[in-house]
Image 1 (cartoon, one colour):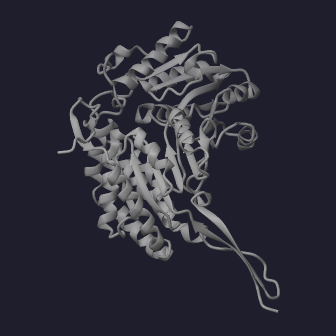
Image 2 (image 1 turned 45 degrees about the horizontal axis):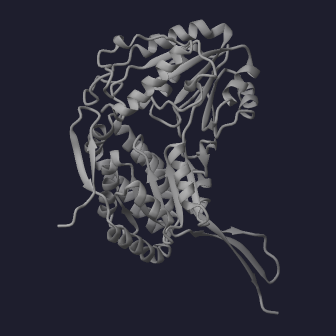
Image 3 (image 1 turned 120 degrees about the vertical axis):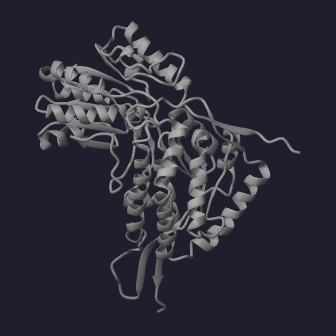
Length: 465
């Protein structure tokens, strides 16, 4: 019997083995790539309405199994069970929106008529789209690329993060239930080395990746010189500016949620908060009090609001950032002992609020990806703007004020992909999801999301003389 390399999913909940799978071997990978190319020749000719039917049925299957898939997800990555069903709901909302706008987004651009001349721009499918999805929002991030890719006439091969590879299998299960033609959607469980080989393979026409900056750079390196498209949604160090006229109760409640939901393991989590001098002391007091209401514990229990991080290694990295900041002069506002489940050497990490911070600290520059937020006093709008832009990342930023004109003026100067006013850590599928600087390149969702998954093909048709 041939030896196969294995992947093990170890649950952060209690260390148990959730699942064990084999990596795809060279032959399986080659067969998947060949099947994808063959399937795409037929799939691109299927009317958009029929493609929509398949995708809608996939979503219906996901929703019918919502609670089962949600509990499975909690075991895989540790998000509290009271929240994981919401990810399946979000998959349905985003997927249906992208299906609904597909016909309009993919319609030919027809130029004004001229005698004896017809001109238009057709949106043509790219071919085989390789989607590389992360573990932190395994269904939501994947559906952002899968649905528009299929609706545009492409076929998809999904490679999921090892920790949440069961999500890839659930997508396959749902598409199979929908009767999707063979080869149109496939998944592969791949090692990093084999993933790089797939990126380089001539059968792949486009790569959509969501994950860390470090891995994004490796993907760029793998694709270098191959003249194929890349979409990279990478890290974030998202800032918020609480102006002196902000509604205190609302801004505190939403920013606490924006910082600690999913244990802060989100590319668009709020990690830096800048507060107007006059509101600073009151804001910090209210913010810390709100954070202390969280319940850190077993995510399978309904009362738990904060679960473990992905694994002990991830938690120790965050603990290291906290310790380093405190040694450099930061003040921790919460005693870890306030949360009984907090334990060094485990993935269970108490939420933390750090003040007396400055931008020389690592925690103000590098993505934390954990339940920690820094709060800093600022003198005025110019001071806040300079601080918000002092980051290698630029995914989202939020401004908390009653003055929309002020928010617009600041928003136009913030180096970010999305500007929020009195909202944070939110994704609206009608808006383009983009990052600047080290937060990535490309555009997902909205009508513009279809542009990167198609190529324009121009037609200039002149009548015979």
